[in-house]
Length: 147
Image (cartoon, rainbow, N blue to C red; front, side, top):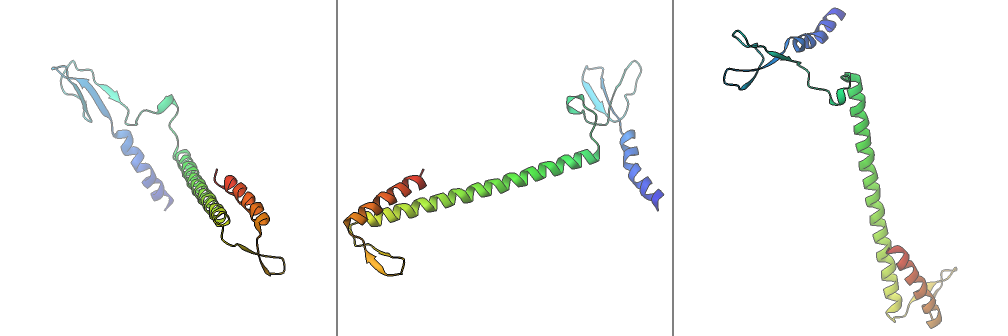
């Protein structure tokens, strides 16, 4: 069983080794590229490798190296998408905080009676001094939230 698996794994490599590409100039001075050698005398074919050229002259990467690079790129892309989603959520939260602060400021500046609750849960209405303090707090909160 192991021999069959080994033979099946080596078979594509054998076909790749046999596949060769030839390049030559014909009598009309045109470049011809073919998988068959040229026919005729006096023609010197240039044998090209079946493998694509490796960038930077480095040795060809093994399948395991390519798989590891792929997984690394995949992980980086996932982390980038996760970071972008987190940034989008933060931006939405900042916008919501800004809108809330502006609405609170608008209510306080409207001149309507505004009620608050004390520590015992009892409702009380703001007088003018308290309203001015709350407006100052609301303006500061709006400035910080809406940068």
